[in-house]
Structure formats: structure tokens, C-alpha cells
Image (cartoon, rainbow, N blue to C red):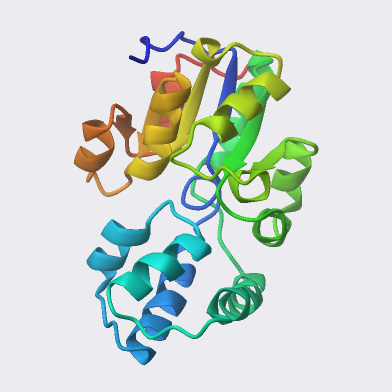
Length: 225
């Protein structure tokens, strides 16, 4: 069982897509186009329920199991088209830079733990020079590790890389898959649910919040001077 969070935390571990950058709508739109083309039409809610927080190889296996006639080379082809679309522009999640400013002012280190590939993180975070430099050397990919979420390995690795015990960290997620990874690692999790739809996150032990300003208050971060 995950212990109650230490507040303020000693370190913060962020998911990437849907927490730092708003990349999921673009990715899911492209995915919906592809799945419909290969015989598996799904609406936004279905795609969100089935695939949020997963990996593209995982989507491939699951979609085939649901009847999509995806070709054998679909994963590599989809990645290239996805990267091209993301490179056209991905907005920041509102309030992220102000949250990082407060963490910096409090001397609290942070890292990224994402199921996305290192290349994807460079494309999305790299569009925002005020953002990617803050995570230099602290971008960790569950896919590159061979242990994507919901396995706890990624967050355990990120905590260790920061020199922190898991219980002294908190994880910031937007998917039940990621929240389960945090729980498996013994790290308290806060779940970003900007529309107030945090029930699925709460069901797996995350504390829902609706804005990065609200998260700063939940974490008891001191106000900047």
C-alpha cells in the first residue's frame, strides 16, 4: 500500500504526454484515423479508455486483438507519421512553467518518467526551450528501458536517479496506467483531470486535481517571493 504523501515532497516525477505537453489529442486523432482505416472505428472516449497511458506496440497488439487489420510494419510507420504531426506544434499544459518555477524556488528536483520514446520527448518538450532544459539528463523512457507502465520500474528508476526514496517522491500522472505504476513503486500519485473527471484516477489510488496551480497548493509548495 502506498503511504500518504510527504508534503512538500522531496522530488516530483512527471509523466510527459497530457501532464507537461498537450500531445494526446493529436496522437489520438491520428490513431482514430488509422484504426478506422483498418476496420476498427472507435470514438474518442473508447480510444481514451483503451489506450491512454499505453505504448504504440501495446496499441498494435490490443487493436489487432479487437479486430483491426493493422499491417506488420504499422508500429514503425505510425511512429514516423506521429512524430511528423507532433513536430508541427504541441502546446504546453497550462500552468506547467509556473509550477516548475515554484519547485525550483523550493529547491525540489524533478524528472520525467514517460512511456513515450526518447525521440518523442525530444520532439514535444524540445519545442519549448523554457521547458526541456529544466529536465536535462532527467528524461526517462519506460519504452527504452523495456519496462513501460504499469510496471513500476520506470518510476523506481527515476526516484533512484534523483537520489530519493520512493516514499519521499510524488508522481504526477493523467492516466490510470501511470497511476498504477506509481502505486506499484510505492510512490504517492496526483492525477491531472482538468475536466473534473478524476474518478478513474482516484479508483487506482491517485489524488485528482484540475490545474497545475491547484497541484502546487496540494503539494504545499511555498509561494515565490
